[in-house]
Image (tube, rainbow, N blue to C red):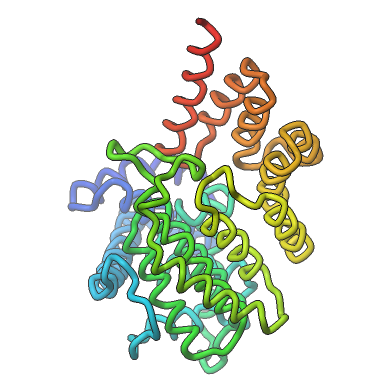
Length: 381
């Protein structure tokens, strides 16, 4: 396999797709899929016309993705921007597709990636960013998943845990960007809750509702991010909060605690506080302790460090942070915040600027840049 040839052909294949009418981002995704297919096929049967082969396969991949995206958007068009409280009506077969893609023959990680790509409508790049892996690695993972299920019968749908993980990732993608995508995830989770009596399904639905209730207050009129402590709580959707809290309480009463219920409990404590200063941080730390026990996730430990800093003071938070890998996403941003609260403005400004360089999206990068500029301006007075 001549990988140098593939690299050299990539720009020209991309140009052909763009000239045919594909937008640049979609064309890049299609070319990436074609390159993965070439790595699989060419060692056994190399084409005579390498560029022509890549153009044909990439264009087919682009058309398939376009049709899938159009189908997803048609489903989303049926969803109101604000999720309607109450039981979900009889729905389409989208939820069944989630279960089919979570096939037992796939590992959970592969099933999630395939479902996000094939049903959720996310690009390979978006999925790679969610999993903190290179785009090429994720493209190969998705391609392997497709090959794995290409010859199997779909008479054994996947488990609920994998479907919940997919729905949560789809919601998070929408929560940070496309509101319709978040609403679609809520719609499907409502359907799942109506079909399956499981406390973690209820926990995920409660978590989504409690987060979505804050959507209107998360950004300013200029599109900039508004941190939780600075949000106008009068703009929070009290009906969604009440529904989420009610669903959570019923789930917790069953005494089968899971990670989504624990996350929802943390969100409920934030929603319950009339002001940021009245937040019950001690209880939030206790819930993070439960969540750490359930998941042992470094990201959970990172968020716990923030909560410890609020409950016991910034130095306690920094001590908790010191035990974590500095390469974790948003580690520098958390360190900056805690150093600022501790009065070390020079270190905080430096860390805010460092965090801005690795921010996952433009809005977060701009917010962190402004934080660094604010502290530098304060120090220069």
